[in-house]
Structure formats: structure tokens, C-alpha cells
Length: 143
Image 1 (tube, rainbow, N blue to C red):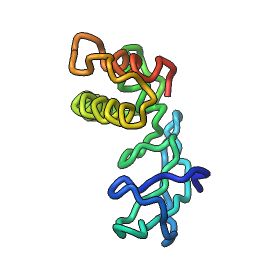
Image 2 (tube, one colour):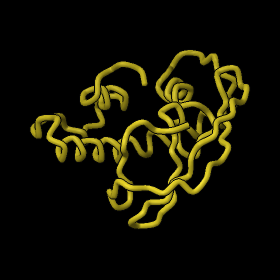
Image 3 (cartoon, rainbow, N blue to C red):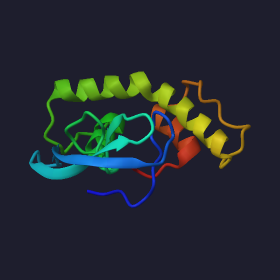
């Protein structure tokens, strides 16, 4: 898989990488079957950190697709995905433990990029569910 856009290094914001290889990455789909992907390994030319070029359908360090994890974390209904209860519990704990941190990072990026008004939504309010707090900034569509 290759990214069509230029993405800055998350460590130093440098825009140039050297391709140093690729690796196989397996991802489970809705039926529990594995799909195989080949992702590129990139080394930043400035800070020399190694990064993997992951598409939007993958979550770093997770073996299920982003859409499956999103459904499991935000859904109260019965899931149609083959996942153990302990895995669901871990995903929900992981997500709700970090959601405020991610929201503050996203708010900071939006302010830096000046794509959104700086007055705004109180992200520290825990009165709304996490997906509604995210939706205040980024819309309510799935994904």
C-alpha cells in the first residue's frame, strides 16, 4: 500500500522519507477472516525514526479494522462481529481512557491550521458521550 499524499513525520514534521522496506500486516474483517496487506516501512531523513505507512482502515497496534473497532466502541446494540467479550472490554477501556487526550490534540491541530474558529466547543465537558463530543468538531458520519 502506498500513500498518495505527503504526510509530515509525527516526530519532527520533516516531509522527506527513505523507503527501507515493507512488511506484512494482517487485519481481521467482519467475519473474523484475516486479510493480508503489505505496508511500507519509511525512515525519516531528518530524525531517522522508522514509521509504517498505514491506511485509514487500520488502527496502529490493533488487529481488527478501524470500522469494526468503531462499531464495537460506540455501539450499544448487539454486534455482528466475531470478537470475544474481553477484547470488546479492552477496546472500550482503551478508547474511553484516551478520548479526551485525542480530542485536545485534534482541537490543537485545528487551531494551528486555522480551519476552525478558536472559540468553540468545551472539550473538557464529559456530559456528552465521546462520539457526540467528537461529532461537535468533526461531524457525525461514521468513520
